[in-house]
Image 1 (tube, rainbow, N blue to C red):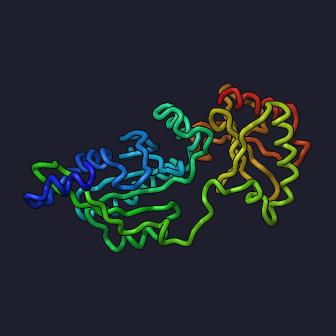
Image 2 (spheres, rainbow, N blue to C red; image 1 turned 60 degrees about the vertical axis):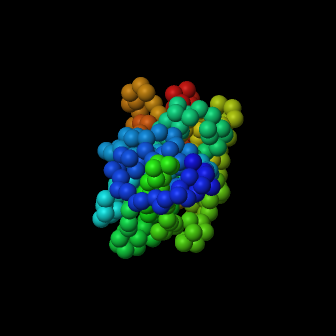
Image 3 (tube, rainbow, N blue to C red; image 1 turned 90 degrees about the horizontal axis):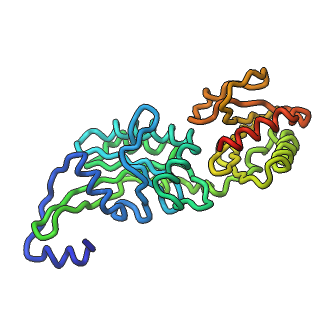
Length: 291
């Protein structure tokens, strides 16, 4: 109910504050996400990630994945922070899986946009100073939202949120996820690998055609429908993670499952233009087809 209608409906008596179960808190929040944050879009709830389950998985208006965690009892906010950081770490390492998930649950939502950096929203009845101070130190953007639930016989229940902390406001402004560039990955001592990277991109595009290539903070993504290759840059090499379904026996291929991504199976290393040979292009073609 719009706030104006709510005021008209309750003028004859005062609403009361009520306690909620965690399940009811989540359901009530999801029914009116705009009250929590304007532009939030629910993708799904109870989403398995790694070893846990995200209460509400959303996208914000800038296409940033948002992990929303709820606690309905006092003194549970520290546990919620640790849980949310664990889930956010998994989300950050598996953007290819998230792209597929969003496309299945909300077709057409992203369009040609790439996913931004993961954010966290914690919803709880209160937050301890320890949680508040710890939130200042963590890497992802985080918002602590204190809630009060009101109930009125003519209106029902609704939530009032108060922002206890929002890193997007408190922290110095950081480069937006969409503003990361390829150049960011080849600054300083890394610059000597730029010609090798450019040669690799040229050979890939000559073999596959136009490929969507974009930079994130920690890697460079090559995307078809989904991410099919990931480039990590070093001062004397670049590592390329790929998805190869058939067993690979080449000594040039390493195990990419240790990278923490859900789909990447192998990686190969390029140290010079000589390494960009037919075998590398074969692997790129296979991972492209697998995307």
